[in-house]
Structure formats: structure tokens, C-alpha cells
Image 1 (tube, one colour):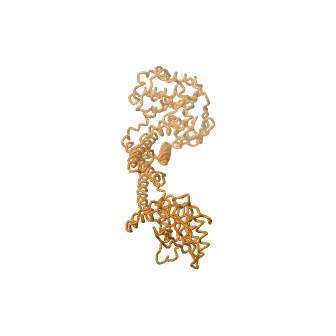
Image 2: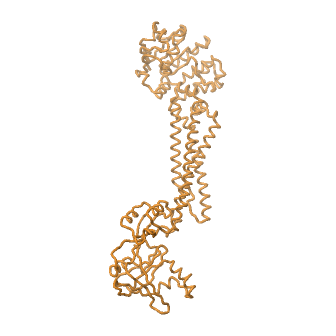
Image 3: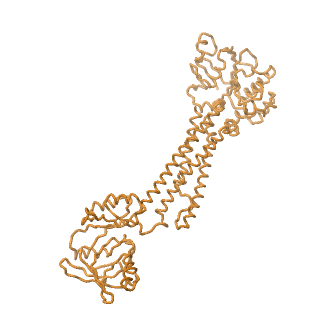
Length: 215
Length: 393
């Protein structure tokens, strides 16, 4: 999957961003299939806004976004759902988990929304790798932020995807856990030959990025 | 798996009381509306069913009311006959034509002497309730067959013979008695023939002769050219039909009151069934409203979860299908239970009425089942459109 941005600028941030130089806003940018991209974004530059635009959660922007050459403005809700189930996965900054479901159920939901990409045992395998096996059957609302973040990462990885969006995916993890999580993500993306865009506040070397951009 | 998770996320438990209310409302409304259909079906069966029909009730003799305006002008015009024939509630019209000559009958023997002036009428054979084998005549026939009302014999046997001290006569004996029929030309000259009674009618209170005899005799002895009937027999599926009674009233016609008086009861029953229809329809409307509100409420109370599911990639169609599976089966179950209740009631009613010699089908009518199917389709549509509308919001 390829995502192309064409002169996009968020309407609420138009005033602030118009006179700033940026690799993303108000210019043309293409994220190619299989490409790993890091976007460094200081606070207030519209990092989460960009992720939401790319995922089609928000539409308050000028310019055009193309998913595989299809203008996202022409895609209806059911077609968006199909892309999200088959091609585009995401780790939200605010995680967006169901508080009253267990960790396993939260992950399962993403696995079974479509024809499952992997078996249910894969969840246990990934949870073991990230060290959250013990909380798999615990209600998410009772888990720590660090645990919730790892649940959200696994949830993003159990579905089929060609493109992964990550918004500060390691913000609540210590360095050791960051390294383990990054290895898991890299392995899954390599296996699928998938592209990803990771946004973070600071410079980082979690992955062997193909490109580093500044928002 | 997905359904189990969705069930956990979109929980209907919060509105359980409201859900029970919605289901109860729907059940009562369905019971009312389907009962109305069943009652209507039973009622139609009682009116038109073969087992309950009295054969004489389907033929009515109709004539103009004799009053100050219509004296000597009671014959029915071609227009009036034509109109009668074209009424939807009339299946056939048979003219009763009267003899247009003077006639008398007298006995051959002095042991049982009688003499009376008489007139005849005739009506197409299809409208006579008896078809005796001797009911035919031609110019070479030995005798003229007559059909007289059963009532005449009753009057003789139970009234006249008792008061005069005469023996009672059985119908078979009466059929064997020949008597003299005198027909009179316009100039007063008489010709005598032999006559015999060949049958007794419950339907037409007149002395009937075969049609071809009447035509022949009218041609030969008749003294006027008018052949307009003053009475007709009509065949109708339902003599109690209020439309028929109203038509007769509006056109100054009368029929055997005995047979048409049921129209009044019919109107009352019609009104009651009508009220039950309307009540059922209104209740159904309210029940649909309650159910719609319940669906809205469930969706509204899980709005955040539904939103999150869509964010994660659940398609609106997937959620619609899931919600439909949550709500629609209850509608089906309610309809099914109501149909069973109606079947039981119908069976009890059938059993109860059987003891009073009124016969009904022990099973619910096809129209009731059809109505249930239509209601299920309406419910399906309401469920689906409500879910669709609120998911897309």
C-alpha cells in the first residue's frame, strides 16, 4: 500500500503552520510500499492530527490524501472499513482500548473482525515476548499504561496489514521494553513486507528507517 | 467469536426493563391485530361456508312495495331489472311472470268438492328449490304440473282441516289427486285441462306452472301484452349483506324480511371487528415506536463503543448485521408465540361452537398466517432502517 499526501494542511492549524517549513504540511509527500519512515514532531505541530488524517479519522484538512491512488474523499464508510481490516493498521497515542474487556479480548477483536490473519496462539506468543502474559485475562482498565501500550501494539499486529501507523508507540515503555517491542514490530513488518510511519517527539533509532522526516 | 465479543461490548443489559416493555407491547398489539384477522376469517367462514349455509336463504323474492304511489304500477322496468342484475351482491335474477288470463280450478269428484279462481306464476327452473320429475309440459301432455308452496299444505293440514273436520293429507296423497283447470279466453269462453300438483316449494310462495306452458297459455288466452314481471327471484351469496338491504330500501323494493334482518346484526359485528382492527393497528404502531426507541436507546448508550469499533475497522454493515441478530429474533419469537396462542384460542372456540352446532376450522386461517408474515416483514423493515439510521449517525 502506498499513501500520498498532496498539499495537505489542517484547517485548525492553518495560521500556525503556513509560514513554517515542514516535510509534510503544504507539500507533496509519498510513503511507498514497504518503506519505514520516522517523523519527528515537536509538540503542537500536529503529529496526532497527521496520523488521524492518514487513518481517515479526521477530515478537517485542505489538500488531498490518496490511498493507493484513490482519493480518500471518495471512499465511503464500508470501503474505509475494508482498508482498515486488510491493509492499514494503527497504534494510537491514546491507545483506544475497551476498558471493560480483558487484554486478550481487546486483541481478539482486531484478529476476528476479518478473516483471521494468524491463529489465536500468536497472541500468547507475542504477549510472552512483550512480557504481558500474566495480564492477558485481566480487564484492561486495571492494567498500567505500559501494559496497555503493549496490548495496543499486539492488537495492531494480529491483523493483516500493508501499512502500519504508530503514534508515539513507546511513550510509556522503558528502554529495554522499547527495544523488545521495536524488534517485534520490525519482524512483523518484514514478514508482511509492510511499510510504516512512526511519529515521535524526539529523534530515535528504534528501527532502521529508510527516511527520517520533520513535521 | 466476533459475535461474543460484540455482545460483550454492545450490551443490552442496561435497558432490560425497557426491552421487556417493548416486547410485551409488541405481543399485545400482535395478538389484537391477528385476532381481528382471525375473527374476520371465522366470520366469513360462518357466512359463506358450506356447512353452515341454509339453501333457501340464498334466494329472495323481491317486489316493489305496494303503497299509495305504486298502486297498480308495481311492475319492474327493464332498467330496474338490468340494474339489479349488475349489483355485485346479486348472482342471478329470475323473472317471475304472472298469468294474464282468468283461470279457476275445481275438483273432478263430489266426495271432495272445491272450486276457486286462481292465477299462476312462473319462474326459470334454476330458481325453484325442487325439481320434480313430472315438472314438464308440452301441448300433448296429459296434465299441467303445478308446484305449490309448502305453506299451503300446512295451512290446510293444521288449520283448515281441523276447523272443517276434513282429513289431513300427506304430500304424496295430494300429488295423486287430479283436478280440473279451466282457462278462460278474453270473451269468457272456457277450456278445461287436467292439473296435478307435482311438488312443494319452500322458496316461492306462489302457484307455479312450467315456463313453456305459461308462454303458450298467455299467447292463447292472454288479454294484455305487458310481460313485465312484478316480482323477481334473486340469487345472492349472502341475504344478510347490508349492501343488499340498503339497495332494496333505496329502490323501494321489499324482500322476505326474515332473511334480510340479519343485516342489522351483521352491521354491529362488522363495527366490533372494525374497532378491534383499528385498536390492533394503533397498538402495533405504538409497539413499533417503543421498539424503535429501544433500539435507538441501546445504540445511543453504546455510542462510544460503536464509534471505537468503527475506528478499529468494524464496518457499519458488520455492526448492522450484528444488531439485527440481537433484536430481530425477538420479533420472530413474539410473532410465533402469538400465532400459537391464536391457534389454541381458535381450537377452543371451534370446540365450544361445535357443541352449539356451529362449525369452524380448528386451525388459524391462512389470512391470519399471511397477516403474521406481513407484520414480520414490517418489523424487519423497521428494525433494519432504525439500526441503519443510527449506526450511520
